[in-house]
Image (cartoon, rainbow, N blue to C red; front, side, top):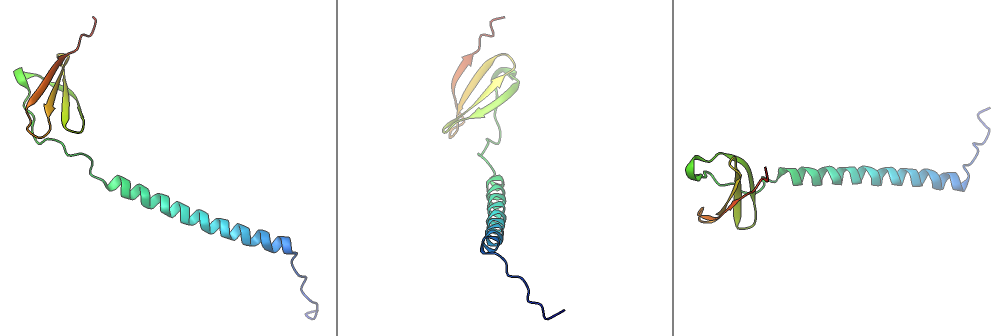
Length: 100
C-alpha cells in the first residue's frame, strides 16, 4: 500500500496556497508597521506649555489653547486672554458676550 503514488496538486491550488501565504505575510508586516507608527506618534511629548501663568484680577482659568506664537486662556468671567508665547506678556483681551 505504500507503493501508491501521491496525487499531485493542481496548479491553481498551488498558486492559491502561495497567494494566501504571501498575503498573510504582507498583512503581518503591515500590522507591525502600523503598531510601530502608533508607538512613535504617541511617544511625542506634545507642545511645550508655559510653566506659570499669572492671570489679572484673580481670574479663574476654565480653558487653555495655543497657536504658533501665542497661547490663550478662557476665564470664568467670559474673557479670553491672549499671551505672547516668547515673552509671556498679554497681547490682547477679548470679552465674550454670552448673550444671556
